[in-house]
Figure 1 (cartoon, helix red, strand yellow):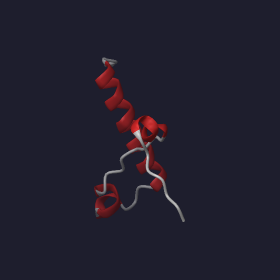
Figure 2 (cartoon, rainbow, N blue to C red):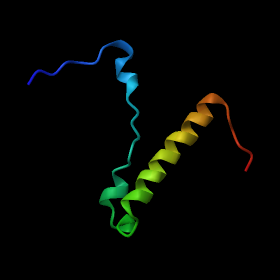
Figure 3 (tube, rainbow, N blue to C red):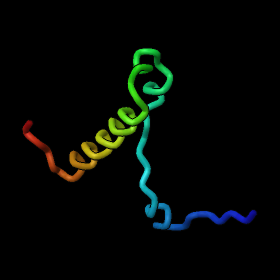
Figure 4 (cartoon, rainbow, N blue to C red):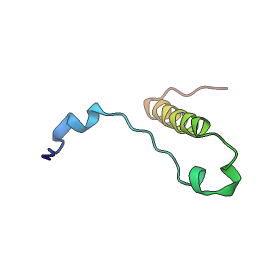
Amino acid sequence: MNFDYFYNRQSEMYYFIRLPMVLMKDEIFESISIEAKVLYSYMLKLFANHKINGYISLI
């Protein structure tokens, strides 16, 4: 196999979300589905981007 590296902005082609390990390891969160954990991570990223870009909701 021959693997190539990502250069410059090529790495920005892929979108990743961060899934906090505490959601996977802590017994408190055992009953929560993996779908809910992924949705939480997605929403966390979405709201972080809104804050960075100045889109703050007054809810």
